[in-house]
Structure formats: structure tokens, C-alpha cells
Amino acid sequence: MADFAPPDDNNRACEPEGTTSGKVADKRYNSPKPMEPNRRPRKADGQRRNNVFDKRSNVRGPARHGKHGRQAYAALDLGTNNCRLLIARPSGQDFTVIDAFSRVVRLGEGLALSGRLSDEAMDRALGALHVCAEKLRRRNVFLARSVATEACRRATNGAAFIDRVREETGIVLDIISAQEEARLAVLGCHVLLEQGEGPALIFDIGGGSTELILVGPGDGAIPRILDWQSVPWGVVSLTDTVMGGMTPGQADDEQGRLDLYAAMRRTVDESFAPFARRIGDAPSAEDIRLLGTSGTVTTLASLHLQLPHYDRRAVDGLIVPSRSMRDISAHLSGLSLADRAKVPCIGTDRAELVVAGCAILESILDLWPAERLGVADRGIREGILRSLMSGDLDRGTRT
Image 1 (cartoon, rainbow, N blue to C red):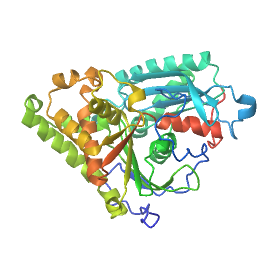
Image 2 (image 1 turned 90 degrees about the horizontal axis):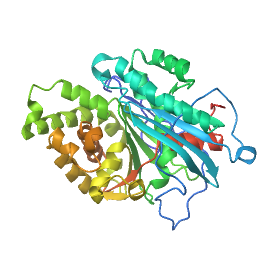
Image 3 (image 1 turned 180 degrees about the vertical axis):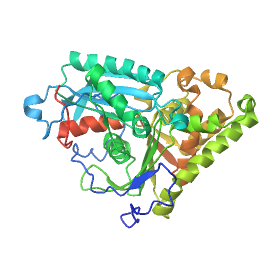
């Protein structure tokens, strides 16, 4: 796997505008002890559904478990679609969640067309961040990190919004790179990779971007990142871009909706092409493995299980046949918005965006045709917490 040629940082002419990629094998972490061979990688003990928040002042050096083992740590993730906070305490080689918060804020709504964060979107995000700030104060968090991702990376007023957040809430958001976002996602969910020796792909479908991370065996429990790609298509940005170009009434009939879905697929496929060329024939290897972390993946896994409502305990760590995920995606792509909203585990919150997530997922399955898909309801937030607790993070926040 290490033989794959890394991208040429000085020659990006072949990549679609906005894509980011690179070889990041030197970004490794010390991790909790490897799992016992017979233990199924399903759930981290004591871990619940979560989110991440963070307030930060820069602090260098490791957090010490001895003196601060019962202290609270926090991770905040302000994404293109959601604001999520997770507060936890160390518990052996893992952690126990003591508080969490999640709210759909759609910070990136309209960004793909305007290039700016709208006033309404910023107000929604600030409302959620005020809740996070109060939780941080109430829990007396010892060390925290707060990050912002693609929406703030792309928006021309992203930096100004970060300043406003700090002034109004006291939360200092770090606009992280796509590379750091990929690294944290791997750190947060890699324990759910199926056992095996074959190459593995971990992906994170966000609101404003999708990260593809090729991993191989590392020095310890943490896989080594061999190559990665970030494309500017998440469920919000892809929906806004493709739906914004549709003709009036196109979504009113099934064929029109299927045409829009095909357009989404083509858009994503083009962005994935440079990564596909770099990894060569790796997807043809035996025993390839695939792990996804995103609302799209967990939602479709819930539909696969025919759950009446979302249940993280049933979904996190689930292994689903890829064929089932394709069948569900094909079905949803032909439904009207009203009909999608009636589907259990989708509802009005996800009805508009889930089709774009399905298109991205199907393109990933074309790129990496694993027979099974691992499902993770964890990622960046958990990666931040593990970094803070292990002392791997260079910067944190004492609150």
C-alpha cells in the first residue's frame, strides 16, 4: 500500500477546483491499547451519541491523567450542517460521555452559490454555540478544543464569523484544514474497521465536503494514513449546487428526480477521479474493507435495520451489505421530498439532504467496491477527545 504515489503538491492541474489531497503518513497518534483479537469492534465502552464542542486558549503539552483523570474534556465540531458538542471524562483506555449536544444549524446554506455565510445561518449557529458555551461552563471543562470545518474554510466571511463567535460566546473556533479533519476522523472511528489484512478506505460525508482516507497497518492500533482526498461536495453543498441549477418543476416527477440524482453522481465522480487514479488497482485487492462515518451512513443503516426511530446502540459498529445501501439509495432518489420526510429515521430534518448523501455514497462504492460497509456514529469529536486525553494535540484549551 505504501507504493501508491502521493499527490504532487506542486501540480494540481488535474484536480477539480476546491479539492484537497495529500500523503499524510507522518500524522500518527499514540492510541489506546489494541482491542483483544476476539472482541468485535462494535462499541467503545461507555460511549454514547455525542457531539463536540470546544472553547480554547492555547495550551501546550499533554493532559495528565493522574492529576486530572476525573476532569472533563470537551470537543466541539461546527460543521456545514450541524453543531455538535461532546463532553467526557477519561475511563481506563476509553472515556465516558457526561454531556452532549447536537443541533442542525445549516451554516453552509446557500454558501455554494454565494460564497458567503448568510446572516440567518450565522444566527442559527450562534444560537447553538451559546448553548455549548453554557454547557462548557456548567461542566467546568478542564481542556477543550473547538473546530470549524468546510463552511468556514470556504466562506469569504468565515474568519469574521469566527471573530464574532469568540466575542459573543467566548468560544475560540479553530478553522482546521481538510487534512486535519481527515486525521481526526480516522482517530475517532478506526476501532470499528473490520478485522483483516486487506487495504481499507475510511470516509466522512459531511455537509460541505467529503473526505476519503486510504489506510494501512500502523505501528500500533492506529492505522497509518497512506493517502487522502477532500472534495467540496457534502450533503449541503451538493444539494445547493445541483438543485440550484434545475429547471422549474423538475423535482415534481420521478424521472426528473432521477435525472437530478444522476447529475449529483456525475459531479461527485469527477471530483473523486484524481484519488481513483492515485490508488490504482488497490480496490481490486482481496479483503478490502470500508468504513463510513456520517449522518448519511447512519441513516441508511437505520433503514436497513427497519428501525422505527434512530438508535445509536443498534447502528454504531454495524456491518451492512453494500448492496443493501445501494438499494436504499436508489429507492430514496426517486421519492418526492414529502415522501422522504415520511420515512422513519429521515423526517423533515434530513429529507432535503439525504439524496445528495446517497449520491456521494454510491460514488464511493463505485470507487471502492467492498462487499460490506462498516458504520460509525463517531468521528471528529471522538478523535479530538482522544487527542486531548492522550496529549497528542499540540493545542488545547483550559477553561
